[in-house]
Image 1 (cartoon, one colour):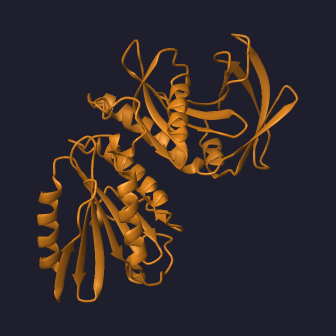
Image 2 (tube, one colour):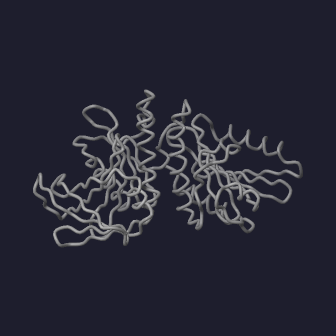
Length: 351
């Protein structure tokens, strides 16, 4: 419960970032301890910014916001601060042992300051790759662990890109999403055109990260570029001996998917084929497929906005994983990966 309240609190803070005096959260999710959200201007109804935030034991919350013009900023919040409105404070900041940079922290409320960052892809990559951020202000130095900043900043950037593309196409991909939720199943709807496919991929990537994290699967890599022959997946990942994929199916039921999947698996198997549906729990259905001596697993997870997620876990040979740039040869897969993913699905599905 404390974690849930903390996520909601960070969401409220993200409303205040990127110069949004009156904002409304239209989409949010959790990603490796970070809160990611999309925000509109409450007065104009137009998209304003996407942001990522995380809290530290020091009581400080670190926030990054990427605006509709792709300008970005960094904010710090501490409930114990009492800052004079309109104040400005010179600061210095440094990522790891890289060059020290200078900026201005502008007071954005009695407990918050916001620092505009250079419009630089090099600086963005530096924050993504960095391990520790150091900020020096008024003779005091604050240090922040940047673990998973790469994933959170990428998610915020994809969020902004999706929202801007949605506006230019006349459809906001997050407009009908439930407000103020940190559930990864409440993300963007399925696309009606190629442009909004990005919104679905953000949703699928978020689900993938949360599912693998909940399953405590180490050493996985999310595939940046899905090969053309596997483009029916909305997200893919690799771990030793395994290829995994996620498909978002907003207009399909579990029963419909099961019938189609079992039929296709039987038709594609040139040897001995068998399938077994495991008992459903909390709406999560898993299907075991066998083709000769090769086993695979399919997990169907309810989607809170309608439809399902189809998660596949397939054995990966060295030849298959070499399809993906940078993939290492892998040992044989284990049933443990599939079992842990099924168990994790029960834990993260929205009740």
